[in-house]
Each structure stands twice: as C-alpha cells, then as structure tokens.
Image (tube, rainbow, N blue to C red):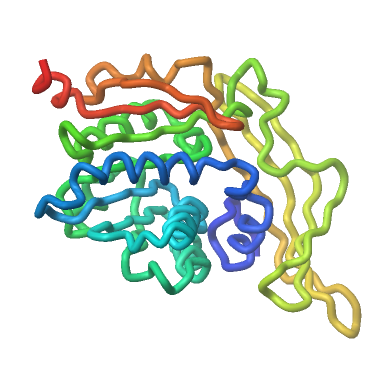
Length: 289
C-alpha cells in the first residue's frame, strides 16, 4: 500500500497522533479557553442559540480535548455551548472522537468538511453562525495552493457571527520564511522507529526525509513503514511515501490578504511558538461606527 498523506489509514493517523505537537508543549488551548470564557460571558444568561465554537482542521482533536480538559478542571459544564470539530479526513475525525473523554461528547460534533467551504460545514451542523473560530498551530500553511488562504478568509467572514464573533488564525514560527531551516513536521536524520500506543506489536519506521522550499512552498517528503513485530521477526505491512506541501509566510503577510475577504483585523498576540491573528467580520466595524 502506498499513499501520499498522513490521513488515509488508521495506522497513518495513529502515527500523526504520536508525532504531532501536544497541548502541553504548545499551550494554545489555554488561550482559546480564556477567549471562549470572555466571549461567552455577556451572552450566557440571555436566551439565545448555543454558543458555537468551530475548530477548523481539528486533526485528532487536540484543541477540543484541551477545551474539554479546562472545562472539567474548572467544573464548567459547557452550558449552551456546541463545538464543531472540522477536518477533511474521516480517519482523523474517528481518532478525535475516540480521544475525547465521555463527559463532553454530547457537546461536540465531528464534521467532515473543508476549510475552503465552511458554509457547507454550517449547513451540516444545523447552526447559522460561529461565535469562536479556531485555525490552530499554523494549520493555514496546509492551504498551499494559490488563492486558498484568501478563499479561507472569505469563508470565515461568511460563517462568523457579525459583531461578536472572533476568528483566531495561527501562523507558526517555524513556517516563517526567515526561519525556513527550522520548518519541520517530524524530520529526524537517519532511520527512526516509533512504537504505537494503540496497535499491539506495531512500530512506525521513518526515513529518507527531504525538505525543499520553492516559491514560498515547502515540500516535505519521507518514507514511513508500518512494521509488525511477530515471532518470525519484523514484517512490513505498509510502505508509505509521504509528501506534504506547506506554505511559508512572511511576517504579517496574512494581513495583506484581507481586502475583499469581509474580515477586519483586530489584533495579534504571541504564543510560545506562534502568532495569533484575531479577526471579526468587517460588518461589525461598520455597525460600530
């Protein structure tokens, strides 16, 4: 079996879950939790539709897990809140659902959809607008084709609640052009073996890492084998040739894409490894004037 992404089989998603950044090291989930509390606070007592959080490119649900962990720690019951975990890979969503604890499952819907068609996601969800939209840890870099970031921003403006809604879009430090030598997903030298925590006797063997930047696009390639340890020795179950294209950014380049998007830039704030750009709908600025 040969694939070119990290999302097309349960093995590949398990590998992704092992090597992808964790909330403990990034600490962005704590920021999103504070933002959620601040945005929800003036609305919590007023009769209204649920407060809707959309986590775009949710992957295996890291941000959603972080929010639910904060809620559990503080005794918050997610009153009148709905979370939409959105990803374009069903295997990712299946893993995210498995990763989430039972306490907040009723508040979360996992939706198969694209960052470039958030309007369709809203139709599937049954809700009209989003109060807090999250595109975390530089996931926008995966929108590497010409015009895709602009299309995403336009889609955000169409689903974000006018006036009160906020979108948090992250640019990862490692995806800045002047730091291109640090741009890695998981690129050790030589051959590395990582043991699965889910599948018994399964190990992931990765090698032949390459990375080239051309026209602001970094193409990362490597070989990933799924190896089963048996009484007869190691047996290769899959050999996958992974290719990932990721956009590299100039400082504040994202802001040059706003004209015509329907969004207004509010502020940017620093995290441990990223910059968060905060947007509202442009209509909210007009109504406030």
